[in-house]
Image (cartoon, rainbow, N blue to C red):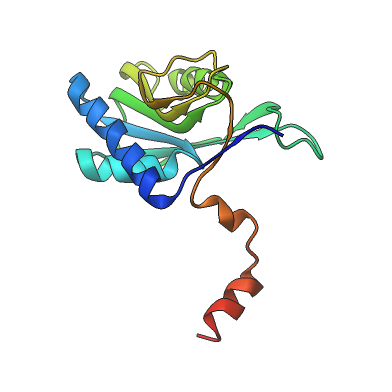
Length: 175
């Protein structure tokens, strides 16, 4: 089993804020934030509030087969992005929680360039992540933390992976 990096909410928020400062100081002005679901969702939620930008969500899943959770398989993209933006164009900031191997980010950029509502309308796509693992082949434009190893990152919301609704009902009573 790989080493674990356990992140609590306070640390998570500080890392996202550090990423926001890095983006601001670079002078890059995105017109649209795109979060790779699910890891990018909480990041673009914060960044959209800080930078007063609209956002979109791109669902990407990796299927690796039964019983193989820690290996990346084939990527499956959603048919459409979810967004209220009527005219998507300009500078895009593509966000994910981490660059593990780099495959998801590389293939997501390719997908965006071919996506009909964006095709021929993109000035530039830059990428932002909270963590870049040591063995990642992808170099993000913005990265809050570059790791010198390849730990399993346990983010503060991941405890809900193990929670059942019945447990929540017991915890909170019948309300």
